[in-house]
Amino acid sequence: MHFWVQSTPPALGSDYSSHLFILTKGEFVIMEKLIKISIYSAICGIILTLVTFLKGMGLIGGGPIGFPFSWLHYTVLPSFTGYTPDWTGLILDILIWSIISFVVLFILFRKKK
Image (cartoon, rainbow, N blue to C red; front, top):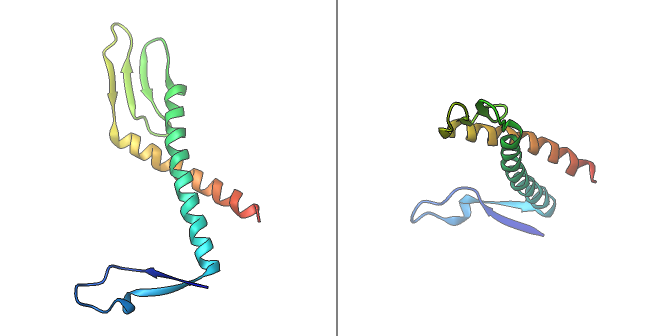
């Protein structure tokens, strides 16, 4: 059984057959597993980033929240001034945790065989 997968979008008026390559069933299953692991690792990255929010909450003083990059700053004393988000730190945190999750999930899915 073969699957046709388009590698790049063809230019207007070009022949579609030159832009296709064939995947065998085994290659398709591997690609499907990698896509599934990528989706799970992105979800785990978001969840782990939000868990670092709970770890960084303190009742006195304030400070940065997030690990390994701080992505939220707050001040409690002398008066609560609110939260100041750092979007670059948040995206980098999600990316780091997603990569770590991808490696762990890849090893777990590989050992399942």
